[in-house]
Amino acid sequence: MINTIEISENQKQKILSLNENHFNDLKSKRIKPAKLTNTISAFANSVGGDIYLGIEENDTSSSQNREWSGFTDEEEANAHIQVFEKLFPLGDYFTYNFYKNSSENGVILHLSIKKNPKIIIASNGKIYKRRSAQNLPIESEEEKKRLELDKGIQSYEDHTLNLPLGFVSDSLSIYEFMTEVIPTTEPEPWLRKQLLIRNNLPTVSAVMLYSDTPQAALPKQSGIKIYRYKTKDEEGTRETLDFTPISIEGSAYKQIYEAVNKTKEIIESGKVLKETGLESLEYPEKALHEIITNAVLHRDYSIASDIHIRIFDNRVEILSPGSLPGHVTVKNILQEQFARNGNMVRLINKFPNPPNQDVGEGLNTAFNEISELRLKKPEIIENEHSVTVLIKHEPLASPSVLIMEYLETHEEIHNSTARKITGIKSADSIKSHFYKLQKRNLIVKNPDPNKKGRNSTWIKK
Image (cartoon, rainbow, N blue to C red; front, side, top):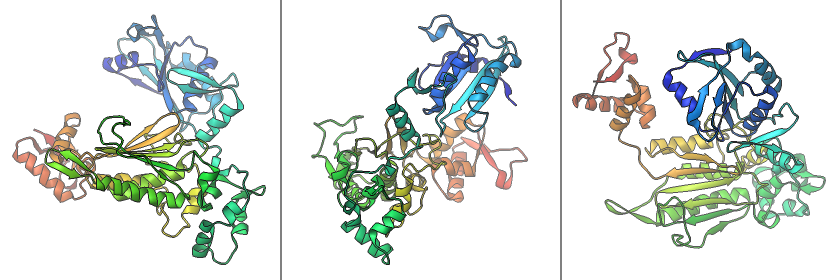
């Protein structure tokens, strides 16, 4: 069943003034349903988006000249919905709502399309991808393969490389691994059993895990570069670069540990000018480890670009080549799991002191540690062919300020909510902040008789 929701005048104006971009599209109800599936395909094959059906544009050069021109009733939209449901049924990746407004006639149909783990084909048999406000057709086999890699339908880690087997079966890395982990067998039979050798050729994952010099086989897409910029500016420049960028090479396992150690060393060796004078920068080591591990294990190895770690005076940026795979988005990345390079994730966990000890929990661990240190949570930015995790060296506002800011937009605050927004784990510590604010005559306990004991909350005075 599709819900019909009454929206306010303010909500209506927000819809009418939306920018048509990578995430939003507004369409007339007169558009043919089959043609609209081009936009649905484009959103589903990208990062998702919203379509508002029933909006007329009298002048395409300005969003101010749009008007509500909805369906007479919900049944009038049936023809559209039937076509959409043939594309893919109502479910986790595609939802509808009707909106009505007291000052307007008719209803508009809101289609919310999430990033889909499969490739969605439009009614005309073509595949589309969203870029800015355009639906671009995917026409060549190369473009389709690129989309499959982006979505994680295929993984470049399974791609074979034209190399002698000895490149992975007779390396120091594989012998060290076998001696520590599986001393009762020989490297080559074990590699074959793990499907790391196919058609008598090593795969990308075999090379990244067990070769001594993966960069000889994958020269521009298997290393890590570390930069130090003496600036807080948005972009680093040649003038602010502190030294020639450092290259980290070797197997994936060795890269992770060396990159973490080198990054930590560079951060702690530098000082920045603050109000209290020159101070050392410090970043949570566990968070750095988890984010760098995540970048190495989940990057797209088909893209000819290294991982880039950029250290600024006020932040660290870790850029990993490849968009987020499958159904993972910036919004759900801490709740969802999708391993682009499943073999690498599984097998590196067999190494002594594996870098991914809690498989699937890396970013959660990083966010939790940063929260405990009362630093601002990391920011995740997805570009077309890369993902950047930005760790800011900025403390959160004081607990009292965060509590009052929360009450600006909420009627009440519970102890558990305050702990969540402040990063403070102790319920007693939060109570002390509530009482301090009460003494300052800013908040009071909620007088509602149902809000007593464990259910008690605080409200603004």
